[in-house]
Structures are given as structure tokens and as C-alpha cells.
Image (cartoon, rainbow, N blue to C red; front, side):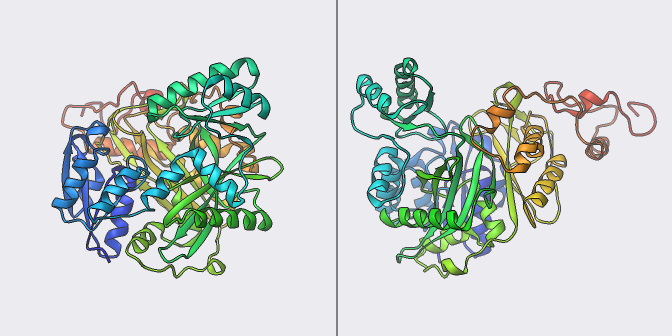
Amino acid sequence: MFKKVLIANRGEIAVRIIKACQMIDIKTIAIYSDVDKKAPHVQIADETYNLGDPTPVQSYLNIPKIIKIAKEAEADAIHPGYGFLAENPDFAKTCLDIGIKFIGPKPEVISLMGDKIAAKKTMEKAGVPVIPGYHGSKQDTKSLVKEGEKIGFPLLVKAAAGGGGKGMRIVHSKDKLEEAIEGSKRESKSSFGDDTVFLEKYLDKPRHIEFQILADEHGNIVHLFERECSIQRRHQKIIEETPSHIMTEKLRKKMGDAAVKAAEVVGYTNAGTVEFMVDKDQNFYFMEMNTRLQVEHPVTEMTTGVDLAKWQLKIADGEKLILKQKDISQRGHAIECRIYAEDPSNGFLPSIGVLEKVQAPNGPNIRDDSGIYTGLNVTPYYDPMLSKLIVSGENRDDAIQKMIWALSHYAVLGVTTNIPFLRKVVEHPEFKKGNTTTHFINNFFKDWTIAKKGLPIDAIISLAVYDSMHTKKQEIVRYKESDPHNPWRHMGRWRIGGKEGE
């Protein structure tokens, strides 16, 4: 097994990987930018190295700097986490060239699956269903408009090198198509340095369902069932769960087989995810393959008992999978909510500032994958995700009720978060019924604003006591009035015994 692994990432995923390494006695190397010097992943790693300038291109995206540190620290392998360099084939190849193991698939596989057009063509040849559309090489606007008319409306214009909803446009009529194509090309060029786009039929009431894959370097491939990822804002997931409410054994078998076939045809190794769109008639279509560990992997771990991060390390070290498809099963139901520093009532704009209090919920089968702590400064440099709250229950109803309770007892003060919004989504009658399509947020929460009622009374009391114990003599600590979720803003003046100021 590896002796030392460098984690080329930050935040909660870096913490997750460091813990996985330490549980099997692997030393860890953390890298950090100037603004992350006190971050949790830095505190728990065995060795730490500073990247300097916090801008991503100068820190967590700086391949030469990271490789130099890996050599200096004598790392055997590099785990990229997700985001940043996780799906960068040049980074994977550089690791390969210098003899450091990249914990993930081969560079050529990352490159192939990163090209959405090439990936879809490969899947078509392998017999994996793909969404009807145009994935050709003609990229002039006139040709794309002509192909769009053949597909019919509504349709999607998507960036070939894209992700996270960037470069994506929904077009409902011919007169809007040219404008959408040109806008998508501009955004794609700006975001990814490539203005290639493709067209797809827009599905009615679609669900986003993905299958987790594990593949070793000896030809063994298994899937670990599906995750329902349809609750999204701006085409990015915020709530995931497993099993999917609509899944039947027949559909699961067909989709699982297709996912394994997709991995097999490209020679995939390590952990990966095959993503599908499923229409209202339960027809499914390949969308893309993510060549890394997914943000939402904990719900799979909670229901299967398989440690995906640990298996990534084992596979990269050359071990054979001992997991057999017939032996893998699910137990209960798991839901994950992504906690973001953002304002859902203001277009989900990111929020920055100091976290004046962080208090995560505790209880049976409640997991908090976190990269934050009280006093952390949330900066504008990186993705605003703070943590992931995961619960599991005996069934879906049980998991929903547990998640509602957990969100009600998750306190983050100092910045605006999406915690109240997530609770409202999980409480919604249509969510409880399992009617979760990718249109859910737009259909039911388009004009959502927070109700001004503060935090639950038990959270208010505990935070008041905490503040009284940490208040300097003759000084009353007050939270920032800019925080709309600040309980003191709505509860009026308070005191713990005696007169205010004593």
C-alpha cells in the first residue's frame, strides 16, 4: 500500500480523503493557499505545504507547483478529490510521467469522457442509449440552427467541454435558437477555452439518475446502484438520495448493466459515475460520465456499507475488487443536502464572511462531511459549499423526517446559508411524494424568500448560552445585521440573568 498520499484539494473532500488514508495507515500531505492555512484539512494532515496566492489558478489549479511539492514530499500518489484538477487529463498524465500514481482513471479515459460529444458517440457505438440530438462537427451557427430544427423544440444547447450548467441554454422556439447558440458558445469559450457545442432533445419531466461504478485494474467492474440527483439549482445538484423513488428492479438492472457497459467500453478504472436522464415514461439516456469521486458519494456508502474513498486507494495500489455484483445490496434510504454559503432568495448568490458559530447536528445515522469551523473566513475564491449533511433511515419517509430534524438543528451564523431553503424543499409535499424532476426548484421555489422567524428555540438558547460564556467583560457580542438568518435580528434583545452588560 502507498506510504504517503498528497491530496490535491481543499474543504470537506480533502478532509474525507485524509481520514480514509489514515484509517489504512497511509501518511497524508495537505496543500493549502494563504486563506486556507487554518482549514480543517490542514490541521489533520501529517504534512502540509503552502501554495501561496489563493486565486485558484495560482494555487489548487497550479500543476507545476503541486507536482513540485509532491516530489519534495516524496508522495507515492496524488488524490485529486473532485473539482479543480480531478478531471484534468494533463494533470493525470504529468503524474504518470514522473512516476507518481494518479488516483483515478487513465489520462486518455479522462480526456475521452471530458469531451461530451466524443463520449456520446462512444456510448452510441456500444449500444448505450443516448438522448436524440446533434453531436456532429459542424459548428457554424447556420448548420447548428438547421440541425436544431430537425430535432424539434424544446431542445438544449450544451457546451461540449462543459459542466455545472455553464454554456447550457434551453430553447423553446426556432426564433430563439440562433441567439442561444451564440450565447452558449461565448460562455463555453470563456469558461472552458472551447466554444464547441452540441444539441439535445429537451426531455419532458426528466429525472437525473446516476450509477456509481468501481472498476479495478484487472478487468473487474461493479456498480453500487443508483442515486437520484434531480433536485438542482442552476443545473447543479443540491439534494441527492438513494434508492430512487421511481426505480423498479427491472429498470435498475437495465440501467446498472448500461453503466457497467459504459465503463467497460472505455477501459475505466477506479471510482466513477455514469449519469443518465430518465423521462416520464422511464426511458433512460446516457448523459455523461464523471471520472472521479462524486460529491454525493456518501449516500451510496450509507446504504451499501462500502467505503468508496478507501476502495479508490486500494484500486490505485493494484488490489483486485473483492466485491461481486451479486453480493452488493442496499439497506434503508439515505439523503444528502449540500450546505452552501449562498442566498436562495437572491438568485443563490454566494455569501462571504466569518463563520461566527458552527454547530452541526448529532444523532444516530447522521453524518456531517464538513470543511468548516467556528471562526473560518469564507472567501470568494472557491466554491461556496461548506459541508454535506447526510442521513439514513429505515425507509424514505424515515430518512426525510430525520433530515428535517437535522437541518433544524444545523446552526451556521455569520454568513447566509441555504439551510432554511433545503428544509423547505425536503418538507414540500411533492418532494415527500417522490415527484422530484430537474424542474422541481423552478416549479415550486422560483420566488422563494425566507420567513422571518429565526432558529428553533433550542438552538437559540444554546447559542445564547455559548455567547454569554464567551463574551468579554463589559461587552455584548452582537451578530452581523447583514445576516438574514441571524436569530437575534428577529428575537429582539436578550440577556442571561441580571442586567444587560453585567
